Image (cartoon, rainbow, N blue to C red; front, side, top):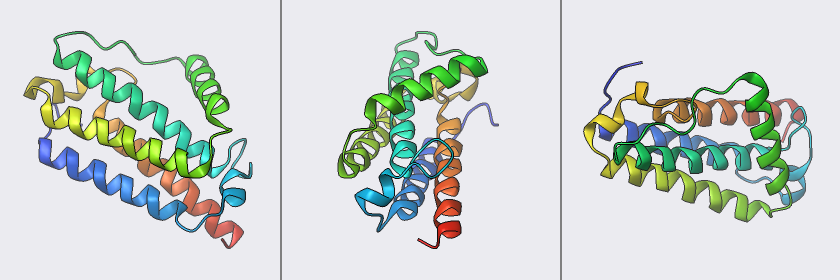
Amino acid sequence: MRALTDRAQLTSELEAAGKRVAAAISGLSEEQASAVAIGDWSAKDHLNHMCHWHEFRAMEIMRISRGGQAAFPPFSDQQLEVVNRTFVELRRGLPLAQAVEDLQFARAMVIEAVANCPEEALEESRYGECGIEAGIAHDNEHAETIEAWRKGEGI
């Protein structure tokens, strides 16, 4: 990863990842999106999972922009499992439309934070678990997982 990344490039990549996620879930019914069929999660669980990480990420960018240190250092595998499981379970009952809107809003908060942060806050090494570039890769990874599930199911 680069030490400093162009703000416009980050924004473009965040938006592209968002479009890929949107395309991956496009046309799914509430029932299809809510079916636990991708390991222990549903497609909607994946959306809720990405959402909570973008919410954390937006706050980290703002925190680092104020001169603070990352509040989310790299997690152990056990910590990561607990955080992911907890937040997915808490949001599981949300309707698909809200999960989609919440994710779009959380990603928009990240994009706004990127647009308004000082240049040094774009330095990926300042982040622990919630890096900006890591968020782009994370969205693309989950989009790929949903795409593969849909292909395998013929949906």
